[in-house]
Length: 639
Image (cartoon, rainbow, N blue to C red; front, side, top):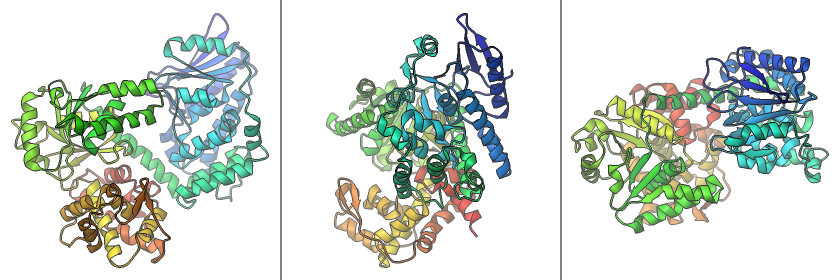
């Protein structure tokens, strides 16, 4: 076989090792699945005492189905055939008489998780890269190879629906706790543990009585409650896949092929939905952005020095430490650094869910008021206040003390890099690495090439962004770059609507209905109304600022940070009253129009290289409704 290798141990265990030829990761295309059938044929002829699936790759277990292959499907019939192929072979695997086990090390996604679910046993290897997920909903499709059938039977409906409806990753320890994995073991003992478990005769984990009821007579009640929760986040018009998952599980035994063709939750309906096409498009955007981090050769930063321990600088430092970097954080005094350390500690506890790992991460984040870390750092990020002379003086000092190989970066959002770089003896060393707030939640980072930035330095900056698990977007040095330059006219239009007498609630409701994660008025409150005014003056230009926002700023009502702006905030949440006024669809089109035109203009001006990158940047940098495929795709597809 081309992709699978079978090895028989002396004790009668067969190891089925997947190492997809010519690829860095394992995916389940037609050839791989056909050969899996051959694996089962051989085991039928010579039944093993146990069959263990493992990966022959360094990079994980199985990344899921071959998405490239999915894009070649040109009819619902071909989509059904693809689902039928996986459904049949995994059912065959689940029915074999000998014990089977999936040894999961590294990423295990989609069809890979469904293969593991079809095995009698699962072992998750306890290391940071091990993640299990059914992320099909993120592509606008469903886990049709048995995931909707088996996951609820193994972990219970509540946990299973949470995984399937959100696409969230589960780490090895959590997989063990929830029953998705039978064991969680360190790498050094994983193969021995697999041998012992597959021969153990251990009975599968039994669901508690109440979970069995929820998986049986109470199915409809559970599905209805989950449907109400989904409706708060996504409409069936924009995102049909989660509603299809609920219908298939509740009414068709998790069999996607059993849903009648004419139902809106059928495979045929999902396949022809523009949402599915656009979400697959967004998936490839993400892969393209990841590719920008692969061009820097041997650049492997380990030590990051961040200057400025405010909200942005402190959160950038915390994120870098979370991703394994040693980080020195500089500000004028230890007292100024302390709030950033406190926020970091909370972040580590939330993300790592392990006190020991959280402590290790906090140990990697070192307060450094004297700035001694500059001398050892591989990457130095300036995140001080937006003052040109202050930044020039700072970079002149950094250049004298930093290693010649160190990457010099600014997180500026409003100043031109070329103006800052005049302070440097080697201006080609300066690059922009522009994060978004909140740092821990926003996946995009703009990598800004100034007029003097070396192309190699820009590549190194993109590589660093990937090292900390963010998505790098190359942009030119222009006011607002891409993301802020499209957001400013959009938010400005929303604030003008308030001057015309519309309520903030009506405006925000219109854009939430459109598919934005947050309305523009609440967004303005969140970034700070003083900041919104300053950015608007700089990037919108030619018009006076909307009057109501100026009144609020003058009164010291700056938004969420002051407890009141357009909304009052209680425990960090906006207090909203009912919405009314202009029809949301009509209003949404008015509000989004300046954003669409700004994106088009920025591509024409070369701030981003092409329309696809503009769509990717606006989706991952602002949360622009992913079902649209991005602003320029939406502009082109509108009637």
